[in-house]
Length: 434
Image (cartoon, rainbow, N blue to C red):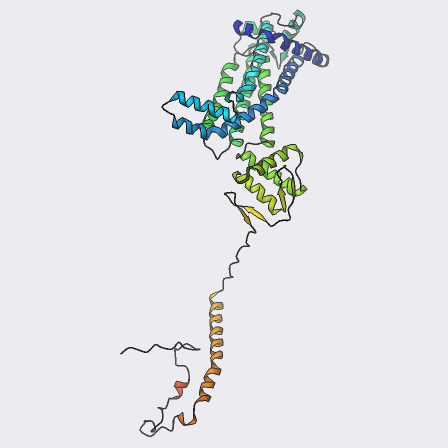
């Protein structure tokens, strides 16, 4: 640890100076020797550091999304040059250079925060060892040793013996209970932050090895915090727990307002944005305009959630512009299909005919047959009136044979429809072949 302390000694003095300045403010409120004054000083140090690291956090988000986009191309390179590791590395570096992606950018906040972490650990370890560090003099050292957070000294560890803890004015039970609770909270916050990233802000349409690595880290990091946390002083646990809570809140804000394309968070965001735009008829703020501008610029490359958003605006009579604004549309309705192809004027749905009951169908058939029979009656009367008078059959002789020169007489039943015969005009029969 002395080697690490000597490496980060250049930052120990600034960190101790910041803590002392915050302690002077909180000491005037809560008392200089209280755990609130020293604990809030450490929390304020974390907030100050994380505010300074916001630009790096933005770069981390962009780098992570760029790496997710490049995963399919990286997988192709690995399969193509799986037997040539040197060529594989060259093609990877070429891909990074062409796309302007740096794999180490996703680790920038952690790397930038490491010097402050080790400097604070060295300061608190010096307080526990009764050594003055940086701008912390003997008076401040004595005040820091008296400070307790929920009964645990600021410089005590979970692995400290009872004699060392008693020298700091506390009991080993209080120290281990407080440190155990803080270690559990620290590990849980780390797990929840990583799980939130994997379940809500990852493009689920692309399955890559990068996602498997992130899932593995979701379980590895909490275990690492639990193992190393037992060797951290209470003040360092306060520092790291505050850092995790800040990261979790910061990530929740980013996921809600600037989600990864294709993720569940984007679906929820575009649904909220659609409701807001259709209600007010315009986008609000640079963030919403930037999202709409990016969706319009994609064209046919939009994903399912983005096409649904554009279709929702179209149905509401609105149109998204290239500059991110939304205006009222007077053109014909355009609806995008799943492959992004616009369809003009979606046809109305065809209405299915109402299903009739069996009795209704039978009554309709009878009425249709009667109507057909009625239409054929004039033709029958005309044909009868056109016949010559001498063509009518004469009286039937006694033998039942027709008179000479006349047609055979037909009975009364021939003039009417025979039993079982369908009413109306009949289809003529084709002549039979002999």
